[in-house]
Amino acid sequence: MADLLSLDEHGAELHKGAALASLDILERLLSTCSPGRAGTRLYGLAGLADLLHAESLIGSVAANHLGENSRPVRAILFDKTPGANWGLGWHQDRTIAVRDREDLPDYGPWSIKAGVPHVEPPFAVIQAMVTLRIHLDDVPKQNAPLLIAPGSHRLGRISEPEIADAVGRCGTAMCLAQRGDVWSYSTPILHASTPSTGHAHRRVLQVDYAAAPLAAPLEWLRV
Image (cartoon, rainbow, N blue to C red):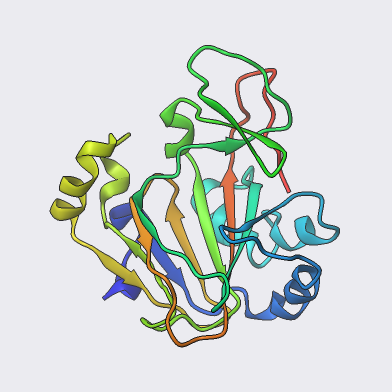
């Protein structure tokens, strides 16, 4: 069962109710956001960093994996509704958000997302990260739970033609959740999602965490 997965072995772990005590404040902060079709990138939202730092209830989940130097480096709000409902094929997250573009060896290609510079770093940077998904709504199987390929976080950078074979070898797990649950993932894990069916909302705050600085002069965007 998915709730028996561990981050070290499988690349994902469920933390039941880990965000419940923070949800009311979190929802008030996020109520001012207008999610886009593929998610809203959050930067500079007053009060958000206080809920996500390493010593907070939510941030401590990442700190348990990465250590006390863990810090949130990117946050994205996803809100699937009947009017904004999408699916994503199997893929790895390979880009990071940074404060400014600085051209360095092994960093690239570059892109701009919601006005923020993003870059694909050396894959070791991605492998050292943890991603949290904080659930603001129940996610039964009809409400677009994240699908993962357990163990794929150990396969390194997987080229596009190799993804289907990797998913076939690793199998799939459905990450069901209840409101207030937090899933932690090894950031490079292969994952996918389908459109939601029959539910008004499927709100998820996704936060990437890292513990090490980037190669100077690059800096994490943070939240």
